[in-house]
Image 1 (tube, rainbow, N blue to C red):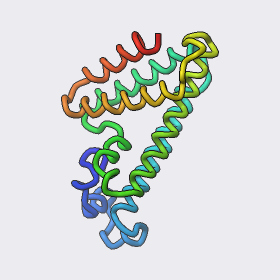
Image 2: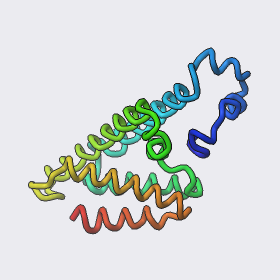
Image 3: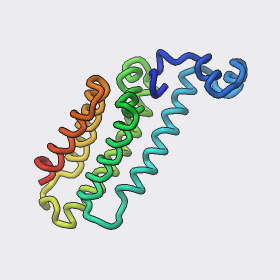
Image 4: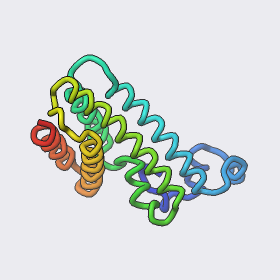
Length: 176
C-alpha cells in the first residue's frame, strides 16, 4: 500500500505478500479499509517513535537536531528512489475525501507530529535559537505542511530537489 496506494492494492496482493490464503485475511480484518487503517496506525506509531528518538531532548541544538532529522529522512527517500513518500500523506490524498475514518486517523497523527515539532521549536525558543515571540504552534503546522508538500513534489519529480528546497528555505530563512 505504501508503494502502490490503497486503490491499487488488492486483498490478493496483501495475502500473496504474506503467504496466507485469502480467506485467512477475513478472519482478522472485516475488509481492506480495516486492514489499511491498521497499516496506517502501525506506520504512524513507528514514525512517532522516530520523532521521540531524534527530536527529543539530547545533545546538540534543537534546530540542529531538527535539521539532522529531516536530512536523515531525506536520505531514506533518496535510497528508496523517491517513490514512497509519507504513508499518511499518501493516504490523505487518496482516502481522506472518501473515508471519514481515514481522515480522522490521519489528522490525529498529523496533529501528533505537529506537537513533536512544536515542542522542539519551544526548546529552540528557550535556547534563544528563535525569538521569544515565535508562534511555535503555527510554525510547527507550517513546517509539517511544507514538508508534506515537498514530499508530494518529490514523488512527482522523482528527485530530491523539492526536499532540498524545503531544507534550505526552512533552516536558512524561516528558522533564522
